[in-house]
Amino acid sequence: MEPVKTAVVTGRHPFDARGFAELFRSLEGVDPYIQHMEEFSADPAQLRDWYDWEESVAALPEEVPPFLQPAEFRANREFCGLGSEVDPQLDEAASRIAQSPALRLLAWHCFRLLYEHLEYNEFRHWPSLEQALGTELHCVFYLLVAMGMVPRVREVHAKMGVEEQVTRDTCSQVASVASNYARLTGGKLGVTVRTVYWMRHYTAGRLFRLGRMEYMIRPYRSGPTVYRNRETDEVLALAPEGMRFEGEGYVDGTAGRFDVENGWTSTFAEDDDAVTGYPYSPLGMAVRREVRLPKSTWDCVLKHGDLTLDMHIPAGGRMSAEVSGDSMRRAVPFFRQHFPDEPFDSITCYSWIFNTQFEQIPMSSTNLADYQHELYLFPIPSSGKDGLWFVFLDDDPDPATAPRDTSLRRGVADFLLAGNTWRCGAMLYLTEDLEHYGTQRYRSPWPPAGLGL
Ligand SMILES: CC(C)(COP(=O)(O)OP(=O)(O)OC[C@H]1O[C@@H](n2cnc3c(N)ncnc32)[C@H](O)[C@@H]1OP(=O)(O)O)[C@@H](O)C(=O)NCCC(=O)NCCS
Image 1 (cartoon, helix red, strand yellow):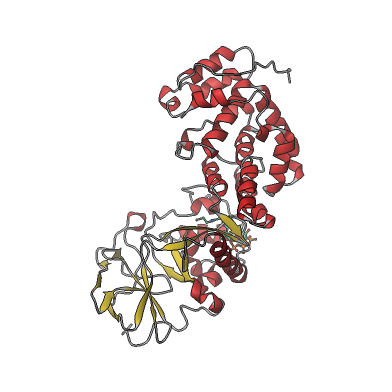
Image 2 (spheres, protein in one colour):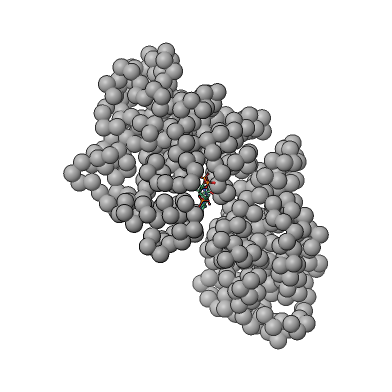
């Protein structure tokens, strides 16, 4: 490769958004990669979204930004759970970015947009750098930006008194998204642009990985209202007012299909004495039988607007019921200790992983079904494609030609090929019940006595 001539971009430059294109033109001939950069600087509409570009130009350090310097990105890489075998590619990408004034400025700008301009959300406009950096390295650019979160995360966690292992586990999400990218590209290093925004949750000190899962405290929205019987300790979730269900009790309209013949709509009403509504079975579907819960025996334990521990599931398999439960047990005291002013009494998660159809899908492990049996499942609206990206790394796979290299992929592809409509799902778990985790707390016994269910 020919040595790259560099131009140092310092001080304040008169670049507004459109000036981005001018920057690259002015540098043409200096850097052999610049000519390719025109590809993403040509669309003025897109350039308008290069928010606060001038500020980044003004703030660009004379030295290479720290997240592009080997000492820092190696430490970051290690914290993110990536092995030293990726160092040669990190070295090459970082060196090419550092030597190209345009790429260096772009990396700096992306870094600032991601970690400093928290109101900025136009990540979909971030350019493909394939022509500028080549097929092997173009997404290493975004990996370096993502890994750049590490010093901030460490600082935030240290101030909170979070133990270092939790910080490392939390940062390992970068390795997790890099493994998806590797699967997607036949083993290449990098992360896709669409995953980069997620890193902000870590620098904000809101999202933490405790064991297998990640969590953050959030307001509980759009799920059922949940009651506990004071005498029997039974738990019952009631569907919101006005939800439309198909005959089996799943949300109607999945994949645009409506159950005209057997569809029905839930109601929910409350007066001084009782709450009346339609229950969700903990097995994950609505029950078409109205129940009345007297307030003298049923307490509301979860409602819209309460805080909840919102759970996220990093890629990586090995999600046994035991490992998943252990994570939930760790998360509750952790968040109570670090966020004492944000009380919560539940863990909730909306995910394709809580699709009850996994009962019918053969896989080499029964982890998903086993975990589901421990939880209170409930139905949610679904596009008919939820989560397929996580399985096939494709939002809209053709089941006839989709990859079949794992039992999960084979199981899901066969299920879709058989003409089934793919659903999504959700779960809740009341923290008070964690001591009963492992006993299928919500479904044994089901239904609660005396309600006519
Ligand atoms: C997919 C997932 C649910 C699997 O968990 P699990 O049931 O414990 O998986 P196991 O470790 O028992 O593996 C079972 C099989 O699934 C395969 N598998 C696991 N994760 C996979 C994935 N993301 N894509 C394709 N196959 C996967 C395994 O290779 C194994 O196949 P094999 O029998 O051919 O060896 C989960 O762990 C995961 O990694 N999800 C990705 C992240 C995600 O979707 N988060 C939620 C976002 S809303």
